[in-house]
Length: 122
Image 1 (spheres, rainbow, N blue to C red):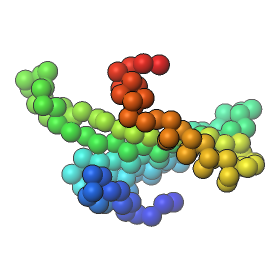
Image 2 (image 1 turned 120 degrees about the vertical axis):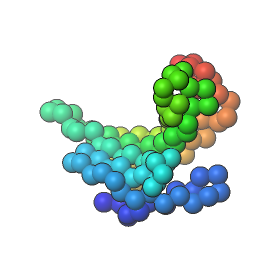
Image 3 (image 1 turned 90 degrees about the vertical axis):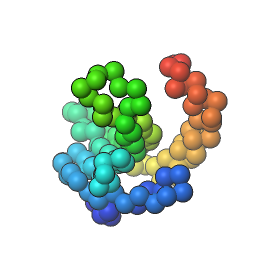
């Protein structure tokens, strides 16, 4: 398991996220006020599937500035950013290949592409 609590820096401010939940497939870490959450999830292997998928996602919850429901002014908007790691169970070449794939994808997702993805382009 990872350290408890996790520490994430958001906009220059360090956030402490203690572990709040553990299951056989993952863990959840959350700030005391619930604004930030890190979810780490490992996809269960299905029979015949020789790959393992692990995802990590940082979620920020912010109050809705224009609530649609007068009775629920505190509906939260959830914005998140995640990364998914997939590798063969033998983990062959993953120690060199995964960092290269991560670097390539993060450099590909620049601010222009990010804007296009946020406006629902596929």
